[in-house]
Image (cartoon, rainbow, N blue to C red; front, top):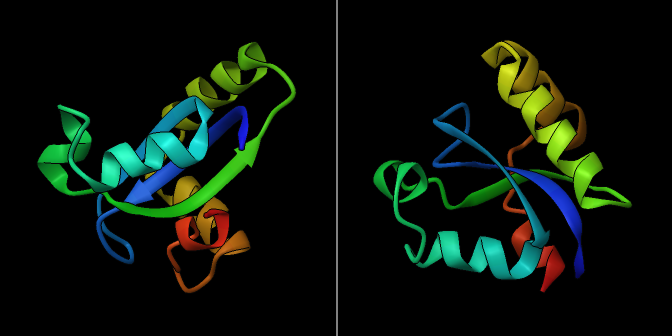
Length: 95
């Protein structure tokens, strides 16, 4: 699935959220799940893919990532729950 994407990871339902952008969603989430990415995601164990959206260009994905990062937490939770009300790990559906 090499396509620009914005994604949100969490450590549990209503837990810590991590918003990221990538050109290879499966590979990037794999890195997060296996603690191969240093920093916030590793520290807070945000390994559950709860939301993602694909974009046509990397520029569009980066713009959207910045937009979502500026949102209040409640807006991010609403976005997740509109598409994934049970906070299921969407990674398994991708691989």
